[in-house]
Length: 416
Ligand code: NIG
Ligand code: FE
Image (cartoon, rainbow, N blue to C red; front, side, top):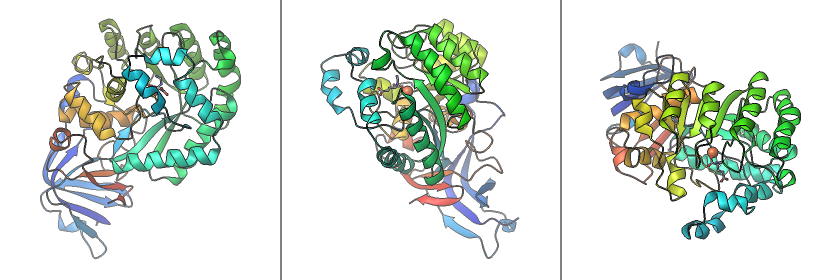
């Protein structure tokens, strides 16, 4: 069968192996690296990936052939954890951070997430749409083709719904595919101060059923953290969400270890997020329950901490991990997944193959899009990120510079 589009002459192509499950432990070091390869696309899907010159059956008069001599290609990158939609910004917290004021102290004083809640509540649909659309533009030029997006800067139904509707609209309008997560339990809003249990009841009784009814999100997430939501409250919320048919995520062990990872394991969440201060016992729990660890080293970097998640240990203990931006206005204001991948090497000491597996096939499993993206298996979407780099090592070594030269989404050239 001839291809519509044939991308030829790549110096290297990174082909993750889709084993029908996320890559656990040592599997994260496995991949097929094709030297001097081509990618054939038909109807926006992968038709064939191979080495050397394409077979002549792949070419007819209609086939468009593009030469990528000297370049490196991987499946479109996937950012499995972002807080995409919000109003305002928080550069006013930057000098506080530099002066050693902690993230949780800023939040306790009514700043942090709560300050973004105020800006988001007062932002219109259009304002949120424009701002988020611009962030997605930044993400795609850095090679990202699929993004998970959380609500959680409304903490009241009206604003949570507006955020989720922005995600739904952008999923239709933008080249990037979006996966929606409801995170009404991101902080305790001012009107529920001291009444976190009542707020959890309100989310369970009033918000979750509406999210479900309007099909506004596929996942439910909660910030299980000291002075935010306890492990018991997180369990209660996620168990109710699971019973309503939501898939689960949980922000766990980010700053203090208060039992979030155990909640993730007990409820078989798809992923547990952050895990900067996870205990060995909890690594064993997540490994056993096959919960994916979504690791966010940009947050450690931006919080100016040195508590990077023990990613190597997690892999040694058999876990599957991803690397994600956590893109948000407070703890990680960035849209550059490449830099996060570089932190994966520089700070977490992962290998380039582990890093690329983390942001392709494992991230696809983390957002439950493994049937359609995350590898170059025949029939998956032709989401392709081309780097102005000769091999897989180069974009990790040449840091803090955007090396993406071209991006294809469903076989269409969307960045050049
Ligand atoms: O994942 N930790 C909770 N939520 C975000 C931060 C959100 C914010 O500071 O605005 C995170 O780091
Ligand atoms: Fe987050």
